[in-house]
Length: 511
Ligand SMILES: O=C(O)CCC(=O)C(=O)O
Image 1: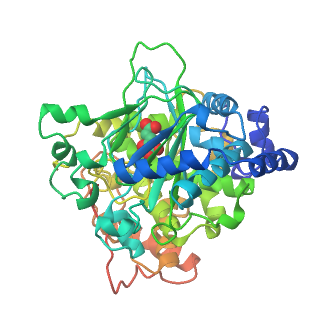
Image 2: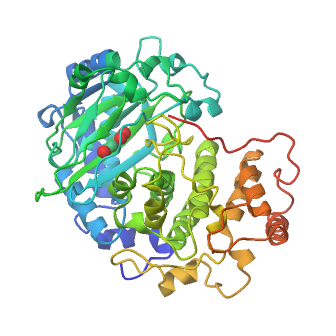
Image 3: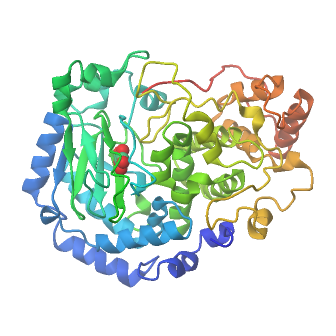
C-alpha cells in the first residue's frame, strides 16, 4: 500500500472494488442472484445439518465435506481476494468488505439455523496462514465466563447451553483453500476428553494438563484436514487450535473464514440482523476495523496467530490503530453497546502498549519470550473474541506510548507515515498533542457511553506515572489531568470516570 487511505476511502465501495475487481461490493444484481440461488435450496441437506447437531452435542465439534455443501459463491474467488488484500497490506478479515463474504455468511446462517438454531453474531474473522511465517491460533476456547458474565449470563458453564444440550455459541469455520497438517488445519479436543468443557476452568490450573493426564490422552486429539469448500463447527467450550505447518512447505497458504453464531441472550449480534443479508459498505468497514482491533491484543501472546489474522497489518503502528478506531467510531452507534465497550477497551489497551513510533510487532517481540506467570495455558484477558492470550504487560508499560501518536515504521508496502495518514491521523502532529490523544478520548467516550468506569486503572497509572522507565514519554499527573479535563469539556461534561461511584476495574481474567 503506497499510502493508507482516508476513512472516507475505507468506507467507499469504489476503493474495495478497484482492489479486487473479480469480487463485488454493493452490487445489487449480484446480490439478487445470490438471494435467488439461496432460495432454491439450502447450503446443506437437512440430514447433514441434523448430523452436525448430533456431533456438536456429543463431541463439541463437527465437519462437512465440500461435497455436502453448496455455497452460493465461489470459495476460490474469495481465497484469491484474501491473497490480493494481503498483497495490498490488508488483514484477511477485510474480505468482509465484499458481497461474496456476506453471501457465504447467509449460506452459513441457513446451515446453522437448522443445526443449532443460533444466529450470526457478526464475529467474523479471516485467516491466512503461510506456514513459513505464521501458524493458526494456539489452543483456546472461544468464550469464558469473563465474556458472558458482564452480559448477565450466570457464571456456570451450564447456563451457556440450551436444555437440549446445544451450545449457545457455535463457530462455523470455512476452508477457502485446502487445509491440512502441512499448511495448518484445525484440531479439536472432544468434549468427553476435556474436564473443563462443562465444569469450567480454574484460574490457576492448566485446562490442557487436565485433558492430557498421560501420554495415551494425546491420542484423543482429533485433526480435521479439510479441502477447500468444506467447513468445521465447534462450540464456544471446545478447545481447538490451528497447527503450525511445515516451514519448508511451498504450496499455497491456508485461508479460512470463520463465522460466530449465538443466541441473543448469550451474545447479542454486534449489529442488528436487519442490516443483513448485505450490510452497507460503511457498516462492513466499521465491523472489520473493529474486528482487527478486537484481535490485536493477541499480538502480545500469540504473535504468529496474530500474523495469520492481521497479515502485514500485524506490524502496524499507533497511526493505523487510530485509523481503524476512527472508522469504527464513525458508525459506532450502529453497534451493540457491549461490543462498543469491548472495542474501546481493546483500542485503549493496544494503543497504550505501543512505544513512540513503534509497531505492534515490537510489542510482540518484547513479550513472546516472557514466561506466563500463571499456570493456565488458556489464560486470557476478558475479550469477546476467539483468542486466548497471555495478559500482556501492556498496562504496566502504558506510559511508553507515543503522545503525538507519531507515525512510525510500517511493514512491507505500508507507509504509515504517509501524508494521507498523517492528515487523517491528525495532520496536527505539531499542534497541541493533547488534542491528538485518541486513546484517552476513547476512554472517556466509552465511559460516557456506558455510564461505567472502565479505565480507572489506566487513568491512575497514567496519572501516577508509575510505569517502568522505558526512556520514552511519560505524561505528568498534571498534564494527564489537564488532558482529561479538556476532553471532558469537549464532550460536554465530566464523564462518570471523574467522580466514580462504583469502580469497575479492567479485570485480569483467564480462559
Ligand atoms: O484458523 C485458526 O487457526 C483458528 C480458528 C479459530 O480459532 C476459530 O475460528 O475459532
